[in-house]
Structures are given as structure tokens and as C-alpha cells.
Image (cartoon, rainbow, N blue to C red; front, side, top):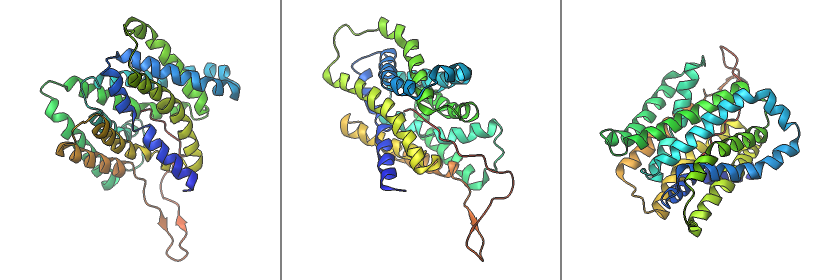
Length: 314
């Protein structure tokens, strides 16, 4: 990968690793989940819409693809961003970030459910088992009450993040990223505008909270989508989605450094299991080579599907 590719990869690891910290700062202000999601989506939409319009054909694209775009917006943004934000009123940002790391594992399972005929093999099945064990380490202590609801909300977020790319891959593969992202963010902002208005804070939030909201909208939403698109162009979709494995480490480190969140043995074990499970469960089959020539041998069986980039908004 080129120096530019490594820069974009490092940038994405950070900008989609810190939303959990920023959300935690906002909800402890306290701001309502509706207010946080509205602000994030509105800022992102305002920044990206001019570029989407400049590409031309935005209205035509929306008319032609409005059904899958609506489904994508609801499953990727409208639902998950609210459940994640609401959950962080009671969960640490570290725990939320670690649970979200299970997205690739759930994605593999859902792909199989929706007709992916690729054989999983021992390695990927082992990855699924390890990842689920990591999620269990985090969730089991809370099943008797306390934060059980928050855990369930994060797990719903995981399912949404894992499902939406399947919709994009099957129905939106020809839609430019900006023309997909900007209308979806605008729709989400409109959905949460009434809730934000009803829970508008009585006094101006502190400078720290305003900075967190601005960073969520500008860096973790608008800049993140643009950078991810460029990373896909530079390094390809397979390498680009490896950022999913970097983000939890950033989330845990940020929570420990800036919010004094504890780094327990359970968190360390869960992080190791989820990370190892995600890598194993999403790994492709190793390419075989001809012993005589050293050239790659095409895999047998059904032709592989074209690679497509998948966007997971943190």
C-alpha cells in the first residue's frame, strides 16, 4: 500500500474510533440522544450535500433508488445511531466500541443467511465462535439487569451496521458514495429534528460539548465518509474494511485516557477475542500458486463476487 494509502488508513482508524468518546461527552452533558443524532446528521448533510449536488444527477439518483436508499438510511443511520447514543448514557465508550467490533462477525452470518454460498471452513467458523465468546464476556455480567437494555441496544446497532451493507451491495452498488450518504444523512436529520426540538437544552452547552458535537458531525461523519471513499480507491475495498479491527483499540484507549474509564481484565479478554474472531471470520481463502510457475491459481467452484466497499458509520 502506498504512503497515501497508509495515511488514509490511519486517519480512518482514528475518525471512526473516537465517536464513542464524543457521544459519551455529549450524553453526559446531558443532551438527549435525539439531539445528538440530529446535530451529527445535520452537520454532515450540510457539508456533503453541496459536493453531492455538484456531481450532478442527485435528484435522478434518489428517484431511481429511493426504496433501497430509504432502507439503507433506516438500517445504517436512523436506527443504529439512536440506539448507540442512547446506550452510551449507561455504558462506557470502551464497552460500546468493543461490542461494535462484532459487526464483521454478524455480517458473515447474515451473508450466509441471505444466500452467500461461499464455504466458511474451519478458520472462519472458529472466528465466529471466538467473536461471539468475546461479546459474551462483555454482556453476560449484565444479563440480570442494570445495563442489559443498553447492551441490547448496542447489539441492535451491530445488526444494523452488518445488514445495511448487504442492501448497498445488492441494490446501491452503482450509486456514488456522496449521493448515497448525503441524502441519507439529511433524512436522518429530518427524522430527529422534532425530538431535538422538544429536548433542546435550556442553556447553551459547554464549549467541550459543542466541540464534541462539531467533531461528530464534521470529522466522524462528513470527513470520514470522504476519506473512506478515497481509501477504497487507493487500497481497494478489502484492505479498506480492515479499519474495523483498529477502531475498537482507539475507542478503548480514548475512553481510558480522556474519560478515566477502567481497563479491566474482562475488557482485555473481550478485545482479544473479538479482534481475533473478526479477523478469522472475515478472512478470505489464501490464494494458491502453481508450484512450477509461482503464478496464482484461480479458485475452484463458483466465481467470486466482485469486491464492493462497505461503509460502517461509527
